Amino acid sequence: MRRSQLPEATSSMASLRIKLEQYYQDNRKYGTTACGDGANAVSFSGPTHFTMTCSLSNSGQGYTITATGSSGQASGHIYTLNQSNGQATTKFKGASVTASCWLLKGDEC
Image 1 (cartoon, rainbow, N blue to C red):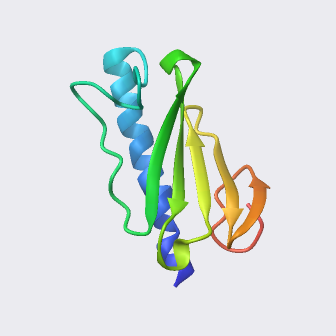
Image 2: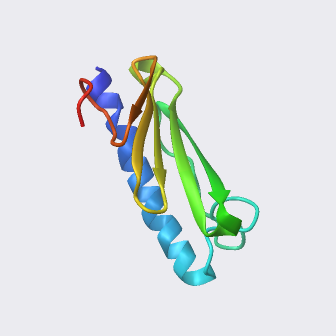
């Protein structure tokens, strides 16, 4: 069951990354006060079992998207993605980890 819910996070973050890159092409930054804000705002809703958030860095020239498991077997999982396509897992099956990839099964990238 867990392996069917975790890809929601990774596919949603990959989709958001594309939207933010399109936003950057139009605005020369990823946002002013929030990721993808303004007239052509980027929506961060979508996955059923994850809550998506985004924080800006470097005066809008960088971002980090965070997917936090909020229900079902996804609870206890946290994944991140940044503007350089840097993928990371900070929590897996409820345990803190430091992995420079998205762990979906086991503890290997």
